[in-house]
Amino acid sequence: MIGKCKPAATSKQEWLDIWRLPEESSIPEQSKSKATLFWSAAVVITGILNRIFYKMTLQPMRNYVIVLAQFQTFIYTVVYFSILFLKYKSGKVTKAEITNNNKRCLLAIGFTEAAALILGLMGAAMLPGVILPLLQQSYLLWQILVNKLLLGKGLRPVEYLGASMVGAGVCFSAWPSKSGSAFAKASPVGITLFTVSLFLLVFDTLAKEQVFDEGEERHKRPLDVFVVNSFGSAYQAIFVALLLPFYAAFKGIGLKQLPHYLMQGLRALMGMQPACGTDCSASPQLAATYILMNLCYNVSVLSLLRTAGNVPMSLASSVLIPLTIWAFTWPWPYLDPTPALGTHFLIGASIMMSGLFVFNAPLWRPLLSRSDRGQQEVLP
Image (cartoon, rainbow, N blue to C red; front, side):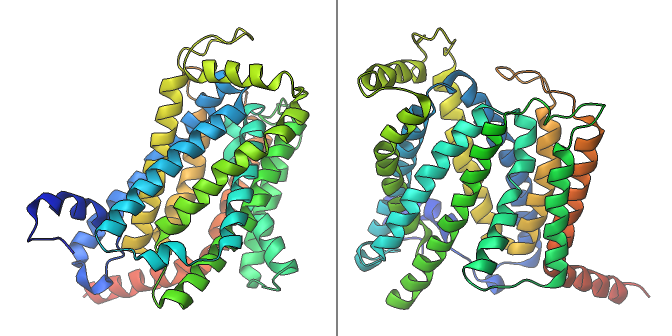
């Protein structure tokens, strides 16, 4: 894969190798264990920082989330197409793989991701950061509902049990209590917007699955992930712009005031004080750091999946939730003090975590069985 005849191109080739799915037999077991440990830690660390900076970026930009969304999608489009271009030049992706794909599904991906991004930013800007990790688990419930009603796909009884525990945990966390709860001061509108954004992402996942399946049939090999990410991000950026009038109507901004609003949002993004008087001096650094953390998180997730598979990824994602909740209780700059979690919140979070472990039990059981067999072989 590394071009030895052209030393100048070697660095590009080596850098691109992280996106290649290695054959399991080609990785020494010791190296694979170290890589799994490294990428698992990377997923947890970058995942926590990604969520913290997501909320921090929204503090100065909470009145201009459409501008932040447009900037974010533009950066992702540039980054993904740059990587796709390098892979095309190195021969890892063909012209047919880039041009001959399901355009309707790619458009659907762009639309659902644009709407989900805008609604998610609007909702998260109204909510305490500490409850966001719990609300994100509603994605699992939406996914099960859509798969059952639209696709007729059922689950195992243990998976239904786990999903029910997740839903019960989220509801219990939000239930009012005398000791108070982090949900007590949460905006119902914010919760609704954030939850609907997760519902849209279920259809985004279904569209991506169809693109990958059809791409493999057309090209007789797995479709490169950056083909989908590049065009999906490009269409997402276009739809963010097209959804601007609907966003303006929701915010009560008239069409005549829209150019002035966008200019003020651009000033806020550049760190200058807009007309609303919000201190936006740190906006450029926060936005850049959030986008960097998000890209690093995506790289870590892909690398862990391709190195070790679904089981370590599932474990890392489960560990990420309580650690993120805990991290939000720290005194971060630019973030409001975290409200008291309350007994109901902590019990609900514990129920939700138990539900996630139960739901993923079919994935983890073979791993635990292999571990038990290995210990029995070592013992005299």
